[in-house]
Image 1 (cartoon, rainbow, N blue to C red):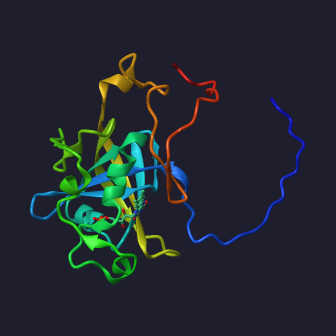
Image 2 (image 1 turned 30 degrees about the horizontal axis):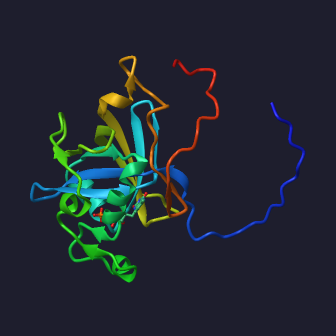
Length: 206
Ligand SMILES: Cc1cc2nc3c(=O)[nH]c(=O)nc-3n(C[C@H](O)[C@H](O)[C@H](O)COP(=O)(O)O)c2cc1C
């Protein structure tokens, strides 16, 4: 292991955003009229079959999840960043909430049309999956909690029901090939892909 003795200079700052580089997901939820809403989200983590999402209370996604606790967590690759960005200035919420209007957010009902993405039927949930996303996870909402200290968003606990993957990123049956798969990273409001592999952990099976 390298022993670097350089001591970094450190400052204490108050950044407006803390998007320190997490994968983008496209969250599909069921609209009241039977169509599907797509919301770009970067606040998530996964452990076992539990996927936790952070979702603003003013958007359409949370409204839909409260009505029907089912979703598809679609995970785009870096090549889909422009499709994601096509969705960015829109909400499925009508009328558009005042806070969203302030940054130029407009109402858009047909998120598939605006993003150029393609729906495919899910196995166990009502919202469709996005064909172009190499990973598509059907999930059920198990709990919705609003943190006391930050009442503008909800912490949504979901349970993954089915994981669908493009064949070319699957290896040895049930593994995702880390050489072939890269998520799209949201890094302080800029999009990135992953760089070259650095190594692997002692528990890696592949
Ligand atoms: C790349 C990206 C990541 C985002 N991450 C989140 C997030 O983690 N949580 C959230 O509530 N909104 C996030 N947003 C903002 C929502 O996408 C935005 O509020 C959108 O209007 C939600 O759509 P909806 O109202 O139709 O659900 C993100 C936007 C982009 C473009």
